[in-house]
Image (cartoon, rainbow, N blue to C red; front, side, top):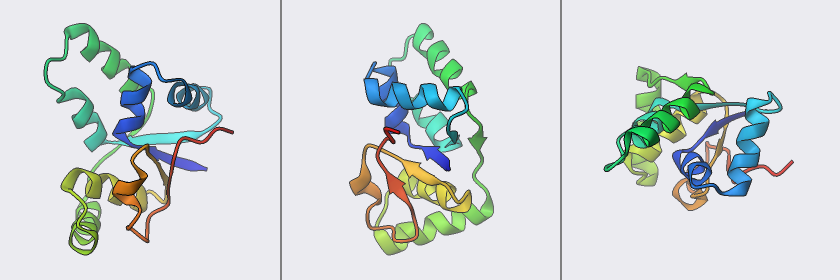
Length: 127
């Protein structure tokens, strides 16, 4: 199964939460195929007051997974998600990236994505 990992899962991992960390270990071991959106990359690196050591830690984490670019097709789908479901721009772009990649979005914030009928979203897998 192919996954797109939402920003909040990586933040939870960086905070030391067990479930996201265990999932990411399985991704690193090749048990799960996963990627992130370049929007997630931006959101992690754009956080205010990051120390240099935190930036390095984030960059190392990001390098473990492929980053999926925003294409014109992705933008058009994100715009439709925004119009139809009132999804904010970042979430719409992440959702559209998952949709275009035919990936399940892994997120803690299911309520942000629950109205997007075209999208498969779930919490962190425990298997």
